[in-house]
Amino acid sequence: MAVSDETESPTTTADTKDPRHAAVRARWAVTAVFFLNGMIISAWIARVPSIQADLRCSDGELGLILSTFGVAAIVAMQFVGALVGRLGSALVIRTTLLIAPLLLACVGLSHNAAALAVSLLLLGASHGTIDVAMSAHAVAVERTLKRPVMNGCHAAWGISAVLSSLIGAGSTRAGISPGTQFAVMGAVLLLAAVPATARLLPSATDRGPAPRTPEAGQTKTNRRAGWRGPVLVFGALGGILMVCEGAVNNWSGIFLHHERGSTLAAASLGYTAYVACQSAGRLVGDRLNRRYPAVTLFRTSAVIGVLGLAVAVLVPSGTAAVIGFGVLGIGTALPLPMLFSAAGHAGGDGPGAAAFVSRFTTFTYGGVLLGPPLVGWCAELTGLGWTLTVLIPLMAVVAFKARIVAVADEGRADTA
Image (tube, rainbow, N blue to C red; front, side):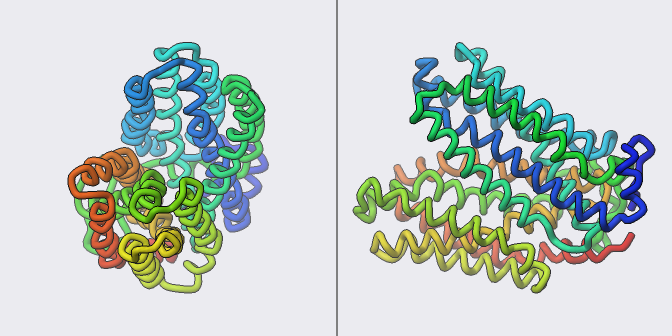
């Protein structure tokens, strides 16, 4: 795998004499990219109520405006494989991470619904681009280091999302407008983006034609490969996980309040337990992934998730439900980052990795966007408890298909 590029800086060129040392630095650089991306996206999400009040949008108008973000992200993801093949993931990350803070400021400074829709459209496109590029770069780091790093990257994203949400809550309480908050945060994040991306792997690392997949018997994979085979399996499993996560994020509080009789204050504990346990699991995920085979760890985690969800929705107790959602958080902590890693390794060590990640991410975004409303529509017909119960066998499917992540171990072992 190429680790140098004549257009890189002298410092980067020097690092190519010791590729492993460069990869260690790149590991922390890409982790910082995940952190900054989480800060940007969570900042505007936390201030959505304030923005709605400022612009006097109805719920329907706001929903239509917010949809532009997700649609733009999904569309942009389809072109990232080609961008990485032409420019390399490092350059795509650097460019997008310099643009995204400016777009965040534009979101906050939007004075009407049309301006907000355009700003969110552009921010969504930038987010979709960097989301794929940073995951592809993490896969490249894993190949060079020959050990997992994806769980730590996702943990950094989760921590930054919590921090950014707290900043938003504090700004709201202090009476600071979204425009002022986003302008200040945008400036800080823009300055942080330069050193954060300075130690990414050279652009030549994943630029050029994609090689074969690591799976024996597979045909040559490139960034134009169709939506078939492993891509669909990776995507289906990722979609299931994100539907379950979206259900907890949006419906656990309602379930606890309406179905288990919890107070409104206590109803939020289900989501809190889920996020806290998921973040804790991801902090130790890479260490566990180095110690145990990927298939064993993935299946064990998914089974824990099945048990946690079963306790949450089947045991008629508010306390049990909170505990169950926490256990579900532990169970879902590792499978999604492991699927991101496996999808990238299945695509090869060039732009094919970005192509596979972009398609996989399309499914996960689909789960995020469609999961919560689907749960709501089904709950209207059968009740929320029965609807959440249906997710239990879906989680069991994830555990059953654990063998697909074996490609990640093979990819990290590849010395090509």
